[in-house]
Length: 75
Image 1 (cartoon, helix red, strand yellow):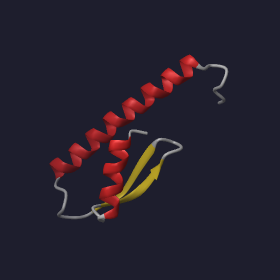
Image 2: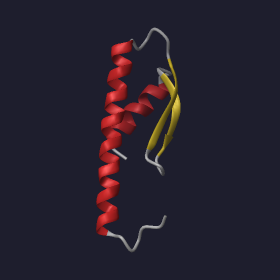
Image 3: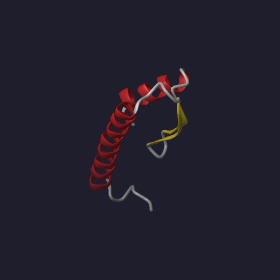
Image 4: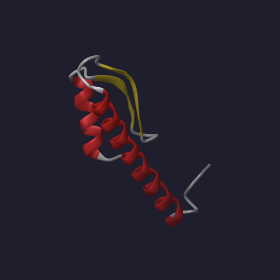
């Protein structure tokens, strides 16, 4: 999991801008609530885009690991 994005999400959770769960095993961040009036629609869309970009990088890393170590991967 990208430490910069994880740290960003942790700070947002800590200061109660968002509520959610960071699942480092699954490589997911689930946002269940956003502080009203603190983040506008453009900021929320930007946050979504950043998380989407992060997700793409995680998927690419997983594909790379799977390709390099096919005998170690279990489904």
